[in-house]
Image (cartoon, rainbow, N blue to C red; front, side):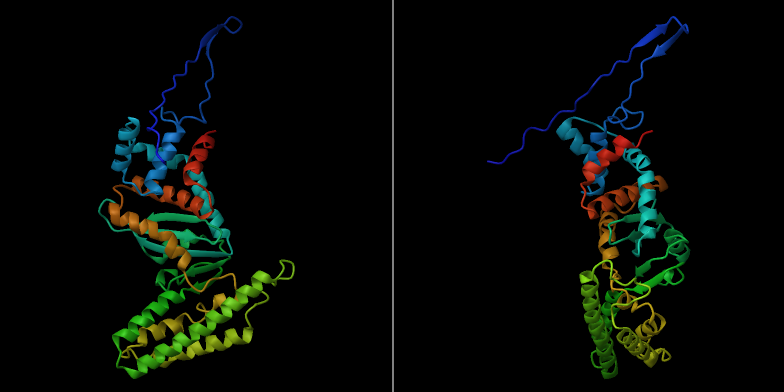
Length: 354
């Protein structure tokens, strides 16, 4: 038989600090009481409670009122929502470190999704890396200047995004546009114009370029993984994918784009313009096997925020948005790197005080 023991009651520990008179300096002195590893800030709630509340809200996506009800029903404890703000105050430095580390990675994914604040529209901007960093900021705008500030001026790695125009002028480094978004739109185009022969032939030609590029990318990635670190050529100098093949596929992509880029009345015009405009940024991954051909990492990383937004509708204040973004950055990074967010929240709160 598998069962749970009765929920533990809250343990209240009383600390008494003595006070004594020094005959030498003729002054009263209080004994020093160091509870930095046990209590959050200057309050009375222990780090175990604070870590559990952050875990319930961020990882399990339990609404705040439900978390309060859970603690009251099972442990007889009533807590304030301000406890989450104390958690993120202690984690501010760790969140900044996650952002800076993500900017320095050789490959970084970016995406954005809607996030309402006090009833006003806004956006949560995400950075995600293959190494596991997840960093989110909330901004009122979706303009490209936000993406530039998010990525920083010293970025040198490859940026992987969809074809949204806000990423067109990002500073530094190279760029890979997501093929999955393009393929999805191609499929929709073919379904919208089933009887238009020219459209069907064009869509099939673009899909054929994708299949050959995907095959070449997988072969290049396998060779890159199998090569010893000492003999593996640097990404900027030696391409594992055949350079002639990359050039050939890029030429095909450019020709397919040029086919209808000038004809604004043709059904293929919009996607043809995308091929022509992003021809160099659609094949970056073929020349550097570390770079994926899709933005799946960012799409998966941002999905919990999308679900949370649909459940809660967003946040009620700028402080609430900052709290939500910081908590998610910490928990998502720990999860992606194989750590327990509950344990890490506890460890963070125990070591964040000077």
